[in-house]
Length: 117
Image (cartoon, rainbow, N blue to C red; front, side, top):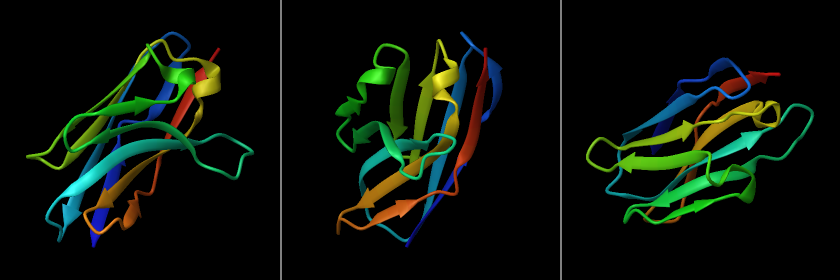
């Protein structure tokens, strides 16, 4: 099993920055893909924000390209999301997701990000 714990959320003004962190722990050999998803207020689905493979390949949703940067530290089993030029539309609960080598997926509890205009 994999346990994911997010941190770094908060309230920030539009144009500001936040850095989210996600720590993975538990019994696993390797995590293939780690990523960030978000659930906006009033929405039921979690939308992809960004993912990064163990080899460092990244993928971003168009809405955050050029503003957000995902990175990971395989030695520490950490994944990060640097969020710059934040907009009110970025307000959401941000969830960390990981996939292990057996293609099982795990989710964190989420961290709230609120961007005021």
